[in-house]
Image (cartoon, rainbow, N blue to C red; front, side, top):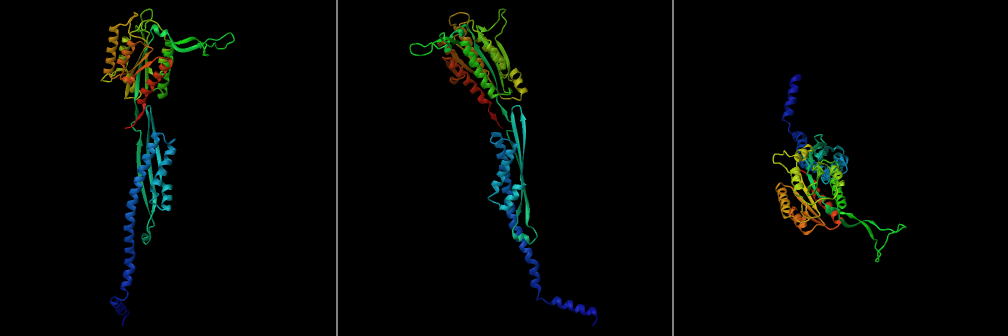
Length: 411
């Protein structure tokens, strides 16, 4: 028999021999079946944990952005730490210690801060990743881990703005503003510099603070509150009108009772500090001019809208603070009903123009109080001050109410 025939005979016998086929098939098929089962299990786990990771990174980005906007974290670095810890904390219930360590080392957070004249916006991006450990079944195919990752971004304070305000102060400097208040300025002393006491042991007042000086102090308190709410002078504009029988004038009849609208309070402060008491009482003209100064035109062509637009302010509240210690007399010493009605008409016009009016009756008679009650934009906007201390508190309260609108708004 030739060599070729012998080989052919051996192959034929091998082909017909079935005794080892099962072992061979098992050796080939079983690893495949094990790998397939491992793929099914790990794929299910991978889909679940990928979703959990995405939800965790989304929540972390939102938490960090919100904390920045609310001032609950000091800076961007603290927000980044918060975001990373948040992701790990959210995923800790689902991960082994090995996977958690991988997640912590591979997760990053970035914060971008944009500052404008009216506030800040924060953009937070969170990239979370880790190597998910696979089941031992996958080890058959030589695969021990699979990389999972998620990317999330959000922002807080975007398109944020603050309500701004324009405020006119219409202040009475008529002759009665030279009268005393009940607040003592200086006390009597003897030749040794000791206070002189009355029969009940109280110090005896020598001079009292006059109304115009009390007004200056009260206006200063209002200005202080406005400056505190807007320290950079990009939200608040103020002006002052001083009046007796109309706007105050010099000897040549030139109007000197106007401090034009300006940013902050500095110009108004200086103007108020120069006020002196003289003349009668008629608030018609200052009310007219105040309306002209701050009234909003429907087409946005008014000066206050333009000035605020330069600072990026689109929401502007407009206020008039009308103060008097008397009643409308004009240049006389008696109440004039026509002048009283004229002032009421101007108050109506201001309200119709969307201007909010605060009124302060400072040691005023009944007719003066009645007028200011009518002019105020609601009972809570009307104040009666019978003492200097009351007046200061009232002006401070007006400022606090007006500046509440400067709170941050977020779209």
